[in-house]
Image (tube, rainbow, N blue to C red; front, top):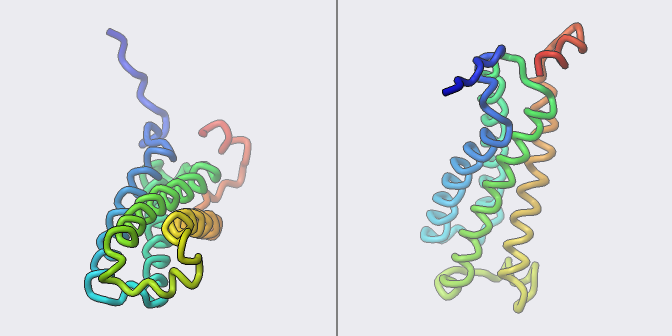
Length: 166
């Protein structure tokens, strides 16, 4: 039985995609729990509640990038870190969108949805809200990852040496 060679860089077996999905699932669960609490406590329709969702999404993307860099031993490729933040935000946004879709579809009588209905219209509010949540969350992840990578990028004086390590 052949054994796998040990990677030269510690933590090299962790891919950007795997890290992004893992942190996206964690962030998505946290966002979903917060959204359910907001819906049951009555402040789901307030715009401030959505702002806290965005802050949690930003925090999840930054933590995913930071973890990826720590595991890779500060030898993180720029696009790998950028991609892990985007994937994290996308996975979390899909989870949050599905939870919001379920809340809007099945709990519409007990929640004030006037703000959502005035934004998207009466007939298309649930599908468009799902897609808008996914789009806004993913674009938030793109911008957040771009900014976070300016802080977390590897400081290498020799770019050719960095390419050999990746």
